[in-house]
Length: 408
Image (cartoon, rainbow, N blue to C red; front, side):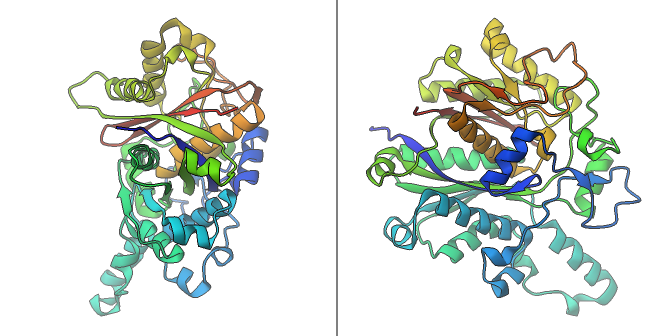
């Protein structure tokens, strides 16, 4: 069967450290961290009082105000990012009507804020005061449905939920649809807004969050002083396009998605087995040689165990060659915005390809003798990126990898 090539022709970003690709990219290069004291609710009684909140977002810039008021925040983010990405790709209403893109969105959680608010109403004011629309706006597939409604799209609409790997898996699914010749255009990405009292409380109970009181220093991927991840919100969307279709319309092509691999890790397996399989599947799908890799965008959420596990997997896959491959994580800049993280990583890679820049691992100050790779500490590096690997891991054992190839 003929295999189609898949191009990235548009990007949309809403991140804790910047809205829009220009602000996001500038923040990554200059070390701007989007982690702050929580403002969405009173977190004074929590052991963790910081998060990666998005500030300055005005849904009215992208969505009819009346419609926006009926949407959950993660749906607002998803629609806004989709509009940004379509504008970036120069796909107007006529092109959308003609091509009718499919939609694949990764959603790790649900709209916890609506559920929490309605629970308070139920137990304080009674069943009759519950908002009848709450169940519709809070379901995980609401963002993809709102994108379809906002853009009047009628092709296919999928929601992927594999924990923090959801966004990367959404991109992987969109890539496969185009690769197999079933679509010319796909809107793919991730959106999550989990910074709520209940979500933070559950993570605090699991004792996996950083207790560092200095927001800008809390997320420290691979650093010896790391003590857990940082909860964040955000969204990111890509326009995926069949390569010949993109070339024929003279689109600006950021890069090509060359391969995708996904693997579950069983509870009886050695830690990292699933990620190792995902990486190997990704290279096999791309028919690429791991020795040709220029850069790795790591999942690395600043977790004591997960960062070390990913380091060990990279050593196992690439052998001694891993010591010449730059590896970095953007979680020091943004925390962990769940499904949006993997897609934001892809965007950081393709923007870096345009400028020959690798974004740094922020807050890497105290080397961990067990995490001893080249993590591009604290400052961006001028470095040509021809092929880049993007990794993501999700609760429940999901592991995903995407290979990005430059066309220049």
